[in-house]
Amino acid sequence: MSQSIIDLIHTAPLAGLSDSPFRVINRRFGAKFVYSEMVSVEGLSKNHKNTFKMIKILDNDQPLIVQLFGAKPDSFSKAVSVIEGLEYISEININAGCPVRKVLKNGCGSALMRTPELLAQIVAETRKATKKRVSVKLRSGKDPSSINVVEMAKICEDQGADTVIIHPRTTIQMFSGCADWKLIKKVKENLKIPVIGNGDVLSMDDAKRMMDLTACDGVMVGRALVGNPWFFTGERKVIDQAFLQTVVDHISLSKEFYGEDKGYKMMKKHLIYYAKNMYDVTCVDRRTYYDAVCRAGSIKAQIALVKDFFGMIMDQEQGQ
Image (cartoon, rainbow, N blue to C red):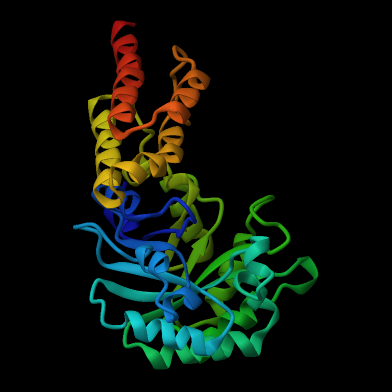
């Protein structure tokens, strides 16, 4: 797979998943543009301890692009000013694309697609508050009758955004149906700044196809990376010793970042994803493994579990 394509992949912010241990693992496989989870501007501007934990990093987890969400221009300005001095943060990304109800009800995320003047103010205030790069993530619009992504992308460009990221699904689609890549192409044709495409990219071949069809400048990938940093290799994940070491390393990084008591809890979802999409593996009972992941009550227990489970797969594969 062409290294140039790998260098144009952006790792999407995934709530509850794209923490520092996850990001470090993806960086080892070639991730260059790496995003934090979605972080509240209200929490940052008011110095909430738990919010600040979301932008802490392990060694080798930089540069970091921090995604911020909110609905008040002055809160964006204050939040950005608070983190401006953190050199490991290279870019501020404004979330105008999240379709989750609890985000929308406060006028945040893709609700901003319905308020052009407010989004313009947010981008402008963010631009004034930082010397770092500023990008904006957008959806296509609220619903099929209100597709306004080209206009909103142009507003972002006019207010000083360096890049826009386009997920061409409507708010009401959530993550269902198909992403309309034609909208990415349309935005690209109407803007001078770089345009990153997002949506329905499950492999490096998909990424290349998106770039060929839309002429976008890069591709953002989300769920396809969870439990699968091998995405960057362009190959399917293979259950071998290197795979096992990656999973164990991820567990160890979670312990280092969160501590023993919280680390194993944060790994549960990741351990389930590592066992998904294992091609040509029919010799195991995944349900039993998933149940065991839920019951494992320590880092030590998780490491023993993955060594037993994936070790069994390797032994059976070698015996065939």
